[in-house]
Length: 577
Ligand SMILES: Cc1cc2nc3c(=O)[nH]c(=O)nc-3n(C[C@H](O)[C@H](O)[C@H](O)COP(=O)(O)OP(=O)(O)OC[C@H]3O[C@@H](n4cnc5c(N)ncnc54)[C@H](O)[C@@H]3O)c2cc1C
Figure 1: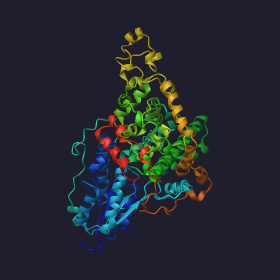
Figure 2: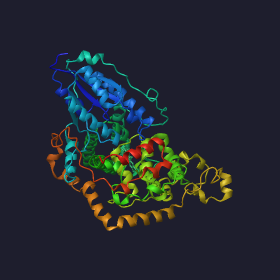
Figure 3: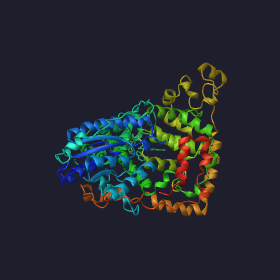
């Protein structure tokens, strides 16, 4: 291997694609005659996280299979290893002599955040140049949220990274001879089989979903995404692909923008009222989906700026509200879909079976857990994370806190599960599908089975309390009490002051639409300056709380699995990240 052009290593994590892959593009540009190869490491500590599920492994394997073939076409070898990240990378370095390691920035869980810091330390010590490049609108080491929207737009409108064929030969023989484990599935990784009837992984599947959404299904997005009856086809269904990086946020945004401009032109040329109505429906839908793509990064930015929100209330004044009162039976009933509230149970069972739910129904599940059952958001959030195929830590934990009333800056969103059932599933189609015990109920009772007279229970084959549970709690009574408790916390003068601080750190700013529409130059493709690669130091988190007020793992022990309890104990003791 000529010393002048050693191979360059690209470390793949949640960026399993070749299209718009800035890390691969950067590696190829910097290879200077060296071969480029990619490594994916199966990390036991990631697989052991309580957020991880076999469905994630299966989806990931499909992504990797697609990616391996695409990389081969570009003369780039994919090598997989199993072990701790630093040890695996060090081993590869010894084998190949690489001096440049390129990866995408990740806003992940506490485990991957700590791992990335270890890798950075190792690279510094070993004299390896570690280049981390952004792949979403999340900005590392952001000093203030002011102006973030413009940075986001700049990223989204920048040219997608093009990944040419690798022509470098330096170290190519060594790379060819590298040992690789191939693509590992659940069995090889010692995980239970994936039983979910879920979306398929891979770059090709992601492109097909995007194309289908933008040319066909997306017309019904506006108006079709709240009801669980229509949402599965009306929503884009891009979230797992975005979470695993099988498609880039920029590619999705640019495709939606191209479609928006097409629709605009079609509307100008439309003659018949039908054509015009259809174009306007598309316009509403595309506007809706583009806002949500922006939210994606907006929520991730919160975790990037303050990693502690994965574990701790954003509003510290909310500490102690729920921690000591979690009733294990309530958590278990909610987790399995046996609360006695039909839509809540149908949502949970559908999620367990498919790995996906629409936003409104996710919010309903959390609202019911947090307000009606008074459960702390951390264990409920872990359960959901495990079963959401699209688990994205930044969105997830921010939403969990928002829907539980612990941010201090959002109005309380408390959903009435019966009203939601009547509004969103008036004929009980979704409920009957996922809660078969209720399939034979007359329409008048499917939303409130507990109101069924005894003779109707007998004729419909569903005895409440035997075949289907009676309501676990009285929603109205429970919510009254929840509001009372939260009001005490939120109205305290010190909470208001703290909430202002939270708003300053994390609140959205209003400059987005204006920035895009008023400045035509912004609509052209920008170079990606400003947020240069490799900025890894995060904004300091707020000071560590008074240990007396910290979530006491002992209080959570009764309802946590052993792994989880150990993790909570670890989290509460570890230094503030
Ligand atoms: C409690 C809770 C937890 C959530 N956890 C996750 C999560 O782990 N991963 C995740 O991707 N989304 C999460 N969401 C947001 C949202 O529910 C999903 O993004 C959406 O349902 C995914 O389906 P879709 O791709 O068809 O979305 P679409 O409605 O088609 O939206 C397109 C894309 O926009 C983004 N998006 C949509 N809604 C939101 C939102 N409210 N906030 C931020 N980004 C959004 C997603 O990337 C999504 O893929 C959560 C919402 C709640 C209430």
